[in-house]
Image (cartoon, rainbow, N blue to C red; front, side):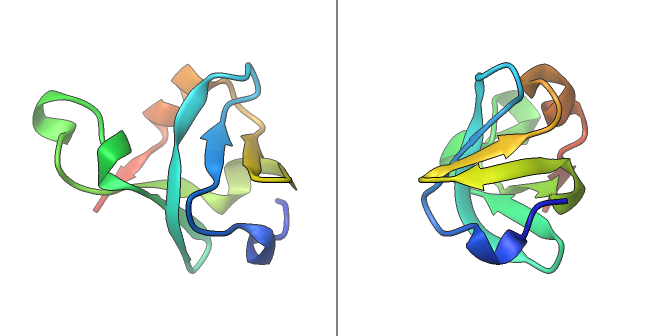
Length: 80
């Protein structure tokens, strides 16, 4: 797991495949809270989702890179 203290608000979160997963709202404990704007569709719309810090491979510049492809990372999201 990468150092989550380097993760800041408004950073892009991308999968290992380079696909956009979300935008950081903030870090809560060992999870990254994504903005509501990246909450998905249907029943997932309008509330926050979380990505486990264990999926973070690297933080470089304004980007959080995950160790899993975007479609896999989304399947691990937790709802708020």
